Image (cartoon, rainbow, N blue to C red; front, side):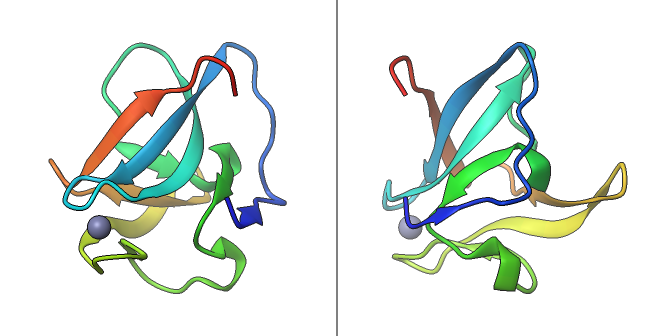
Amino acid sequence: MKYKNPKYRKIRNCFPLEVSCGSCKTPILIYAKGGKGNLIKLQTPRIIESEVNLEEHEGNLFCINCKEELAKKGKYNGNVTYWIIRGKVNSRRLNNY
Ligand SMILES: [Zn+2]
């Protein structure tokens, strides 16, 4: 991916998840996911790397390829967080990342 996230903080018991556009399947970012639930939000300190420069990114998250809107920018626990729009992204666990 193009950009390493300088705000990423390693947390125990997380696994890397590749998050991609649900429409055109373009990978957008790698996320450190904890727990078993569905992916509903992307907290910035858990984003490992991305194709979008999040440091300079304003507003909602769009697919870099087809421009589909994927997530809405908001806040969670004081961190910038992208709330995934239902059904707009695919994710898959990376086993040898
Ligand atoms: Zn797309």
